[in-house]
Image (cartoon, rainbow, N blue to C red):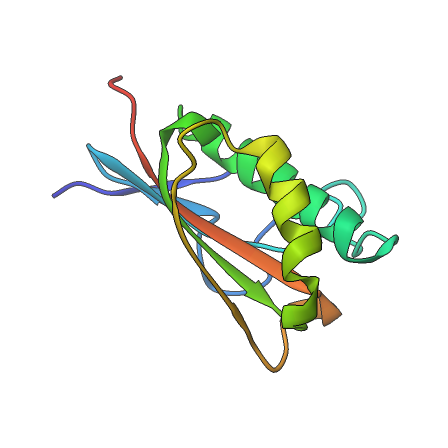
Length: 129
């Protein structure tokens, strides 16, 4: 199996030893995206709604760099600092995801990098080259 790293300046650079995504012939595995502004590297302000929006925009940019879109996503995982943000995140998420939405897991965690309140990762089907 051949795999290669996906990287784009349209999403924040990795903050550790990992790739923004890894693509195989058939799948794209996107690392979790938090609400970092790709230009400044700073966490966006405005609460959970703004963070969810930015995280999904970052995820979209990584998928685009891999030749995929949100319509190609088959599974997402959402990590939340506060499970009480679940309904708000659903509202933002539903504006991004096409029908039918991908399979998804969401759960609360103790902490996320850079003080983020949300992180979203995805697996997508890769479009043919």
